[in-house]
Image (cartoon, rainbow, N blue to C red; front, top):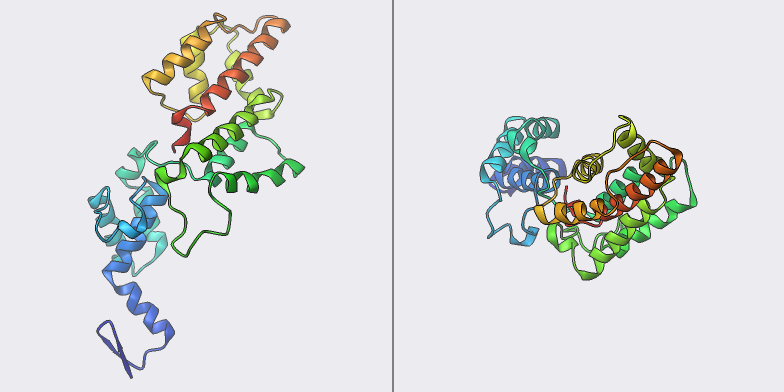
Length: 253
């Protein structure tokens, strides 16, 4: 017979887990991790004992779902994904290197089949600060803005820009096709808005939009009438996408 966290009996390992999961602190710890992963960046884990949650009401709602369902993660995730705070969360998390690389590759939509290029993705995330399946400690990686410093930000931008440089990639071609589908010329401001929408969608700051619109205005409206015009516009779209994936806004999810 033994006593653990106030419960006495012939407890075995599974009993101990049951006791731990029944503690509110366990529900709160797991709920805060879920919020940090799916909703918005939280302070680093070691600070949780002194730093309050970013959204205490959201954490309380997840804790309640955890306790009411006896730790059923399906119920907790259902509560999270159906919540107003999840639906309202946009650009509140810095993408992890794995998310960033995956997103850039998906935007380029290449390669679609196994290709030697895949071998470069894991080293890319490592250079960005996340060696896959090998976190620095049992705590995991420090997330949020700690993903970004002078070196890792350069790696992120270079990787994303490289994915957009080849305009023959299916993802870039898809964007070019959608931009030219109406057959109408696109004014510089509309050119920027459509590319931001098709790249995310992204909500760019006024400063970022100004820079993008200045670039778009250099060559006037985007037109797709003739083969030569389409080729010129395709190259312009590729350069615009390179600027977008290099923007501060592209670092956030």
